[in-house]
Image (cartoon, rainbow, N blue to C red; front, side, top):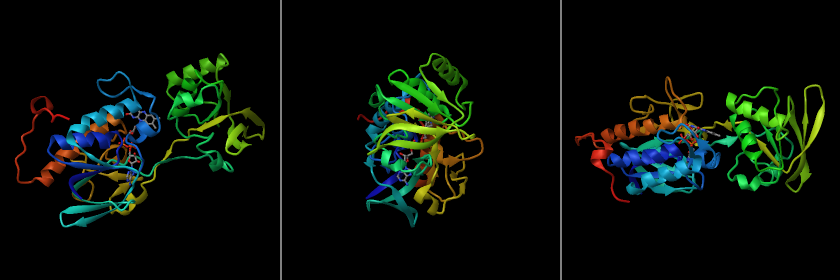
Length: 333
Ligand code: FAD
């Protein structure tokens, strides 16, 4: 298979890079290790509203992904899901991209939009936690309705933990938050809401306590045990445990491709988003440069910058007339 650009990662920035590449005449293939598109937005917070996407006062994670997919559609991207990009090797001026399924694509350029890489949740070090995962322990909330009328314990003290405690308190039988500090690290407005719900007994706060044990059988929790530093312990009824301790950043196979890194991110030149290897660009959460903001809206701009830079590399002899999309239009889908 041959194409102009392989996009590694079908998160929001990878999807928008399909549109931007299309607008400058570049064909794309998109590869993702997950079996669905949307990256963190779809995997971790599909139903949560995002408030800082330009022109949307609020849009849920999954709706943003649907909009981006539709916007990219006229350019007929080829999606290769459920397979990880494991290797890239140079072929003259091109690159050969190989996936874990054995798919091989020869491409003139690559946009790495791999987010946190082979991302996974930070798991609490609890005995036999893997027996409960996917049955009563979850690291994200793909569908809130699954947790209706349940006794839910949420562990963690950041934005995800606090926001989900607030949302789920509307549908759960009980919500208990276990956090090792008495103070929460979330946005002040959310912490105020949490404290108000706690004072109305709609959320129980167990602080400063840490998860110590899971109690149940056949993967189904009945309760959790939490302890404090003085050795006091509390047992809390639980059908569901949601540990929100952040994402583990792991470049996975990308670390072996000869790209310059800084703190597990790919170093790029912000004027082109090019890495140290010619024709390989990086955008979104995985890319770093001075002043980088890990926001979807910045990733969109980086997608446009990388598409324009790749067009110049791929078609060096054609003159490019910059046009606004209002002038140029897009092909019919
Ligand atoms: P990702 O969304 O991480 O997608 C990367 C994709 O690459 C993944 O699907 C992964 O499977 C794939 N991948 C990685 N390595 C490979 C490989 N080797 N081969 C194939 N596929 C690979 N941002 C905001 O701007 N506003 C918000 O309000 C906001 N709220 C958030 C709330 C939560 C709870 C979380 C967790 C994040 C939030 N973010 C928010 C951050 C935002 O989601 C990220 O900045 C954004 O998803 C980054 O997009 P991306 O395309 O760079 O990467």
